[in-house]
Length: 176
Ligand code: ATP
Ligand code: MG
Image (tube, rainbow, N blue to C red; front, side):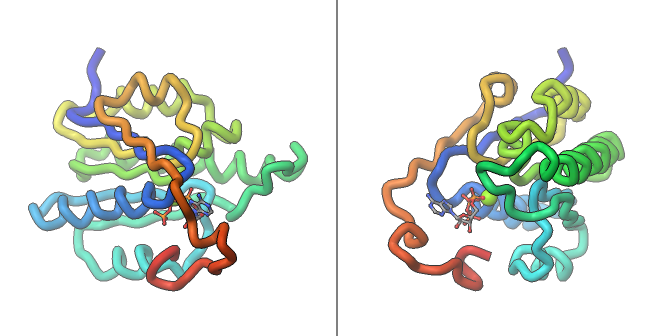
């Protein structure tokens, strides 16, 4: 079956998944490669990565989420998250098949699948829609087996310690 040149997953409960994906964008831009970044589950217009992306020609940065999803969110509250994720998936598919972006970053898509906002198979279909010279990067906690199997490179960020568990609040330039 046709698949992307590279498919990477950054998952696990430690810090660094989104920053690793942003690092990949930084690297690709240095080679003149256009990068499409979509953040599932997020709706924070104040992040440093969003502001930086707006200054770089060739980087398209989109958020398609409604923000933090409580672990015990009732199903009624999940509907808006689900719709935002589905809309993001359609937008991601347009970017993949447009032929414009050698690198497509699907931030938090693993978490969106983990929380039941997206079908795993629909994300696998997205990967299979990629051209043979495209790189797909997926991040998020709880990557499911199908996404892990579909990737050639999977890194688990293991939490040894996290400042937030010690009471250090999310910090500008470090966490957002
Ligand atoms: P980053 O964006 O800093 O690379 P991440 O993408 O690995 O983090 P997410 O799972 O997206 O982490 O977490 C979202 C938020 O939770 C971020 O502000 C992050 O710093 C924080 N966080 C990540 N890991 C932990 C942890 N083990 N305990 C508490 N907070 C965490
Ligand atoms: Mg993240």
